[in-house]
Amino acid sequence: MITSVKEILEKAKKGGYAVGAFNTVNLETTRAIVEAAQELRSPVIIQITEKTMEYAGGRGIFHLVKNDAEFYAPEIPIGIHLDHGKSFEIIQRSVAIGFTSVMYDGSRKVFADNLEITKKVVDFCHKKGVVVQGELGNVPYLGEMELKDVNWEKYMTNPQQAETFVKTTGIDALAVAIGNAHGFFKERATPDFDRLDMISKSCAIPLILHGASDWENGRVAEVIRRGISCFNIDTAIRLAFANNLINSVNNQEGSGFDLRKLLGEAREAVKETVKFKIKLFGSDGKA
Ligand code: G3H
Ligand code: 13P
Ligand code: ZN
Image 1 (tube, helix red, strand yellow):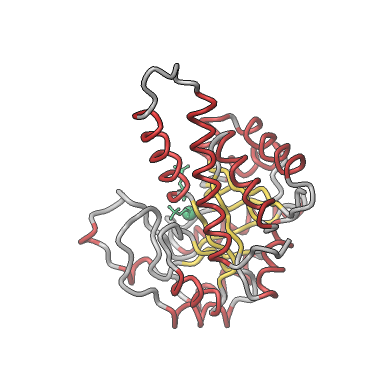
Image 2: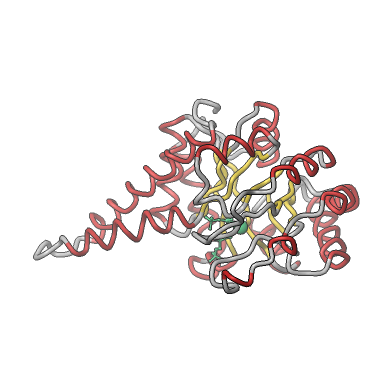
C-alpha cells in the first residue's frame, strides 16, 4: 500500500522505533524489500537514486516499485522516495514521474547555497504535495577521500545551523552527519551522540541516518533513543546480492545458467538482509 513517507516517518518518531529506507536498483531488489516488509508486517521506504534512474529508467523503476508494493503488500505502508537528488532538475523530473517524497542533497554546497536551493525545492514540492528531505553537514562516501584524510569535525552537522536550516527551508526530514559514512567505510570511532541530542532538541522533524549499512545493534538502539527515525541501507543490499550471485555462478556447472534461478536466489539473500535490518530497527509488526 503506497503511503506518504512523512506519515511513515512521523509514526516511527512518535512510536520510538525507526524504519529502513532501502535502496532498490532492479526487479529483484524491489521484490525482496516488498516481501520482507510483508512477511514482517513492517512499514518501509523504498528509495531510488539518480544513477538508478539512469540505469533502469526513472519511470520504469518507479512504476515497478509502485506495482510491487500495491500487489504484493497491499496492507503494508510503503513509501517511495528519491534518494540524493543533487539538482533542481532531477527533483522536477521525479515529481513529474510521480514521486511524492524526494531528497534534495545540497550537502556539498556552502551553507548559504544549500539553504537557498533547498528552500526553492521545498517551495516547489510543497505546492504539489511532495515532501522533502534535506541534508546538512555531510556524509562522506567510500572512495571519496583517503581514510587518513578524514577530518570528522568538518563533516558534522552544526546543531545551531540545523535549527535555522529547518525553520528557513521548511523541510520535512533532515539527514544528519554525526560521524556516519556511506559504504563499509571506517567511520568515526564513536558517533557524536551529544551532537545528535542537540540536533534533536533544536529540530522537531524526523532525523535520518545515511550510511547505516554497517551499524550494529548497540549503536542503532542508542541513536533511535536520541532521535533517529530512519536508517538508509544500500551497501548491505549490494553485498548480499553480489555475494550470493558470485557463489551461485561458481556452483552452476552444466546447469544451463538459468538466470531466474541465479537472480531468484540473490533476491532471497537480499530479502534476508532486509528482514535482519527491519528487526534491528524495531519496525517489525508496526504496519
Ligand atoms: O547514498 C546512496 C547510495 O549508496 C549511492 O548510490 O550509486 O545509486 O548513487 P548510487
Ligand atoms: P550505506 O552505503 O551505508 O548503505 O548507506 C546508504 C545510503 O545512505 C543511501 O542514501
Ligand atoms: Zn545516503
